[in-house]
View 1 (spheres, rainbow, N blue to C red):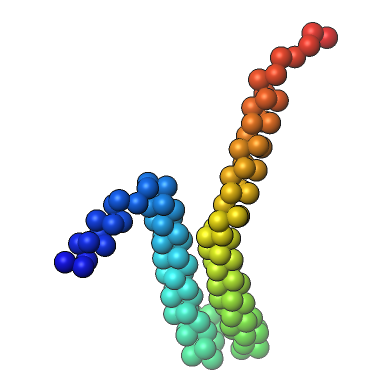
View 2 (view 1 turned 180 degrees about the horizontal axis):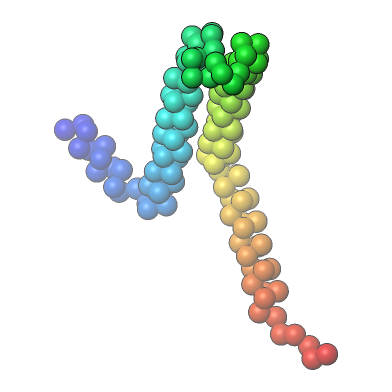
Length: 124
């Protein structure tokens, strides 16, 4: 019955918190899926050390090796960069002060834009 109680508690949360949680869960799910796919590709970069027969006519082994090493470095950088970005975004989203500041800035920006659009213009 513990699972049903936690589901009931989830539905009793305000809609804003449920939406925020769903967006955060979706964001991390996409990040983890893309990381999984990138790690599969990285495994191929590591194991393929010779030019495939399909590329033998258009690429020499030196160019292939340079490209392979570049892709390995690129995938390493992409992993750490993506992890940092996802963690930073999550951390900033969860900070209560950041949420209040961003909401007040957004409200202020929208208000000033609306005033600029709706303000009466003087005749020329």
